[in-house]
Amino acid sequence: MWTHKAWAGRFLPQSLPAKERLRAYAGWCNAVEGNTTFYATPARNTVATWARQTDPDFRFVVKLPKIATHERRFVGVEAEMRAFLDAIDPLGDRAVLWTQLPGSFSPADVDALGRFLRRLPTDRRRAVEVRHPEFFTDTRSTSLLEKTLADADAEWVPFDTTVFFQSPPTSEAEQEAWTKKPRLPRRTRALTDRPIVRYLGRDSVKETVEGWRPWTTVVADWLREGRSPTIFLHTPDNVDAPALARHFHTDVQALVPDLAPLPEPTPPEPATLF
Image (cartoon, rainbow, N blue to C red; front, side, top):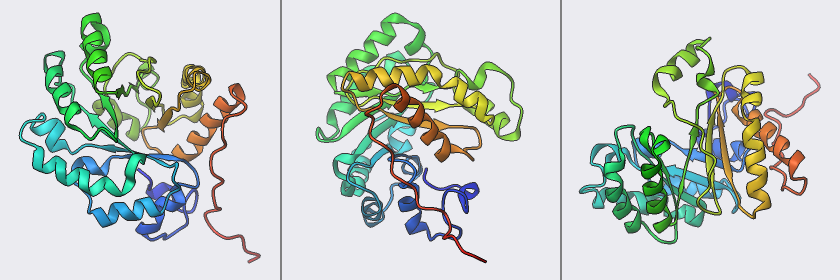
């Protein structure tokens, strides 16, 4: 996600053409979740414009098509996956293949996941997000998934919603998220040198910032270990997401002073005298 109607005039210029929005977003953040790829495989030339709008170190975590992960559960999806992989090829090794699985995907399905992951290109990073509670609460299920991911050199992507579910929703956006987001324990164990975290806060900036404090320590430790994490910060309405991302980076930088700075954003509108 690199555009939001609430960002126009605040983080992104007003009336910015669609083909330029990623470039403007990349002035605020150096990574993006590719959620649209879950619903439809983009044209290869469209993806090529994404590559041209971003620096070589910009990261794309692109979600695999739902036909592969949710509808057919990896069975008979060879043609769809070939089309998807060809489409995102212009991103090169900047693309992480993100397999997000539904809550119904259980430990009994892990073998199928392992076979699927091993068929993915070896020159592309792989990451998996699971939502079945047993992966988090049952030791054997946790170990099974960790071994499967390790064998495929894939990362486990935690979606931390613990802060969000600490108290009832107070807005329409929170109410909608309350019915859709998974309630799972916080997981802070990294399996690879490129851990990925998804964090959901509240509409309240104060609660969101207070809730991510444990992650600043975890991320700082990962950096000291030589890992290169990618952290995605969400709120139910995502109105402040780019600014929150930079706030989180500043909090981590206070613990790891040599952390590279984020890009310097261009002002949304040029300054004028009148």
